[in-house]
Length: 113
Image (tube, rainbow, N blue to C red; front, side):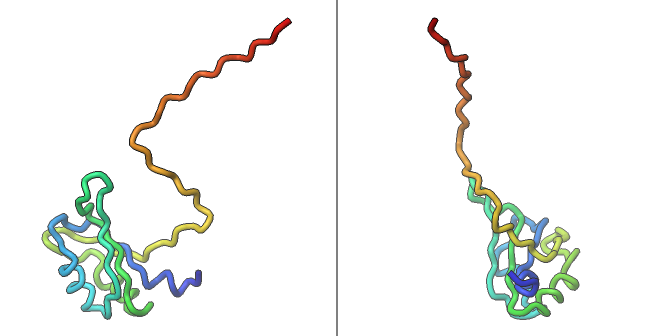
C-alpha cells in the first residue's frame, strides 16, 4: 500500500462514551468531507469503547483534521487524533476463544524390552 492511502484513515481515541456517530461527523466535517466512520465496540458487551476510525476524502483533509482536532474537547473529554497505522499483511490471525483448555501433560513413551 502506498504511503498516501495511509493518511486518509484517522484514528481517534479517548472519545466520550456518550458520543454518537453524528457528533464525530459534525466535528470532522469542519476539515473536509468525511467518507466513513467506524466506531469500535467491545466484543463482549457490544458497547462503544471510546475509539474510532475516520476516513477522509483526501490526504490533505486528513492531515488538516489531525493537526486541527488533536486535543479538541468533545463532550467534556479531550480526544486524541492521529494517522491510523496499517495492519501488517503478514500478521498472524489469532482466533479468540472463550475458554482455553488446559494442556494435557504428555507422558514419556514406554519402550518394551
